[in-house]
Image: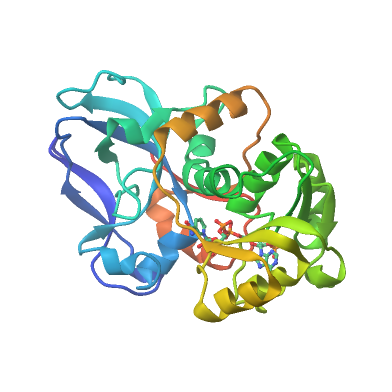
Length: 321
Ligand SMILES: NC(=O)c1ccc[n+]([C@@H]2O[C@H](COP(=O)([O-])OP(=O)(O)OC[C@H]3O[C@@H](n4cnc5c(N)ncnc54)[C@H](OP(=O)(O)O)[C@@H]3O)[C@@H](O)[C@H]2O)c1
């Protein structure tokens, strides 16, 4: 491997996990205002397998494609004009989204301000579990729903990557948090701050709760019409944030008829929010759950795992240099 090349998991056609191939490719170079990061760990998210299959953000990508948006690593080199980071700094981020970031690789370049200093109390594997899921939770709970103390917040799929952060952020803001997950996850979700838990395998949440101010729906209408059903638990004027698949015309009409609001949402890079989140993690207020790590050579197995939809917290790829 020369200093101009690196190992990366590339995709040259959409398909199953077998299209993920470890290759030697050109190492990126930082343009002015960009930072080259040596990747130590890369988080795996549902959007990764969806895009691999030709869904998700596939329409925005070109081949050869290097998937992966979540990165934790060390600054190797900074481009002209960068004053906020220097070689040797430990950083994490979710750069470029929804354009490809190329996280499943030994090096990534991205604008300096899309990175933040890695939480000091986390190793790289746990830091790489944070950006996309925690930014989604932060941007929905804080920036979109403006959750206030005392509000009742329902979070579906609370035990997953986004959900376990959303529970903690909503609780941190003083909300009353109601979480859906299978029963085995309930004690853990209570530890994270859920006030009430509903076992979605035995109970429909609309039979168990009501007068909700905000629903953060992480399941979507493709499974048992979860977004549409969640409209019925909202108080008048309440807000549904439909995270997985947005708001269809039918869902918008149903929300209007029910006298509630529904909004689509897409995560955005935000280095400043990642700094705030790192401070909360280092203060011990937010914990990060990594269910399993895989080496970069087993990216296909990691995709099979995340695609099963049963993850507790996060799945992460680790790299050795
Ligand atoms: N719009 C955006 O910008 C954006 C950003 C991030 C994520 N997303 C989307 O949001 C969704 C969640 O993402 P994620 O990263 O949190 O996924 P994830 O980590 O794969 O979620 C897995 C969790 O979902 C739970 N689950 C599955 N079906 C459920 C149901 N019917 N009711 C309650 N819980 C259920 C599972 O719990 P059990 O094991 O107990 O079944 C598991 O803990 C995905 O569709 C993802 O693509 C969108």
